Length: 116
Length: 110
Image 1: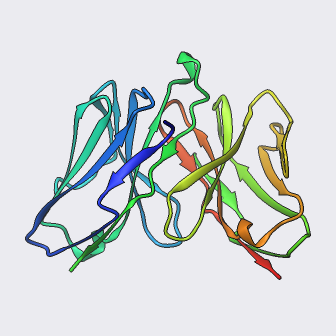
Image 2 (image 1 turned 180 degrees about the horizontal axis):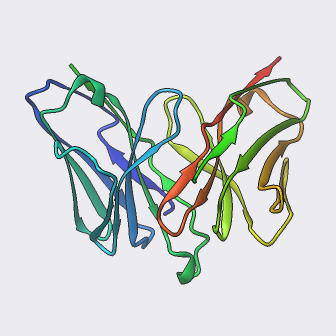
Image 3 (image 1 turned 30 degrees about the vertical axis):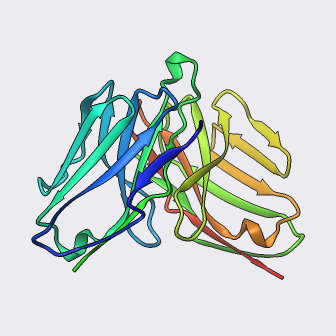
């Protein structure tokens, strides 16, 4: 299994809603990531979890709240978002180069979020 | 800095070769990567090259790395319409912090 699975594929929410994006991988990877991608731009790193601990938070507003319940799952909780938060949210995972991997990121298909 | 540059657009005719270029300012990464993104989809790893190599060939794909000039290229032989996508070069900057180029949009004309 070399897949990263993200749900939902599409999400429309109002600025007062609370919703969550979910990500799952069963490749035994110990690093998991959330990226935000706006149209015609490269992905921008939001958060990195390494061994289920938050290791990087790229100054993301608190209306985005990540959670890593176990080594296979990664959630992104959304609350009081703004229209400018509309984007494709990508989850990825990777295996450390030091543990025999080649370090590449494996991406899910993304969750396209629209904030009204 | 972590600047990565790519030309934003490339158009080729079906059957021709495509060459997508990437320059970077600083990388201690063990590997450098090329990712492909089709419309509405996530990023798919196309190929990677170990930083101590200068060339890697994988079927229709050839990656060239010039470490001295900090230049990476991806050549796609016999380009097909299914190759139309955005191509990102990337490297891992000091672990877990991937740096992506802006992406090159490849259009393949029939």
